[in-house]
Length: 68
Image 1 (cartoon, rainbow, N blue to C red):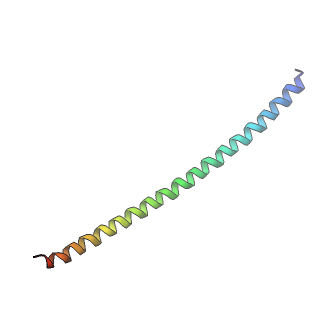
Image 2 (cartoon, rainbow, N blue to C red; image 1 turned 45 degrees about the vertical axis):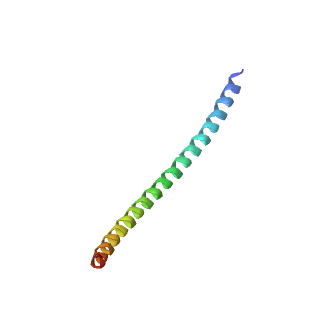
Image 3 (spheres, rainbow, N blue to C red; image 1 turned 60 degrees about the horizontal axis):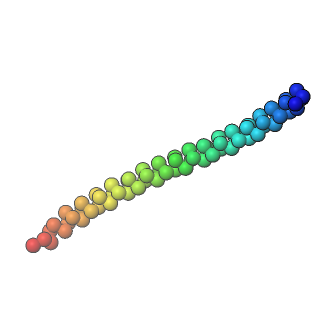
C-alpha cells in the first residue's frame, strides 16, 4: 500500500473514531441528565413519604381518642 493510501486510511479512521467518541460523549451526557433527574425524583419521593408518615402518626393520635 503506498504511503498516501496509508495516510488516507489513517485520516478516515481518525474521522470515524472521532465521530464515535462524540456519540459516546453525548450518550454519557444523556445518562448524566437521566441520573440527575432520577436523584431529584428520589428526593421528592422521600419527602412525600416523610410527609405521609407524619400524617399517619397524627391520624393515629387522633384515632386513639375513639379506642375503647
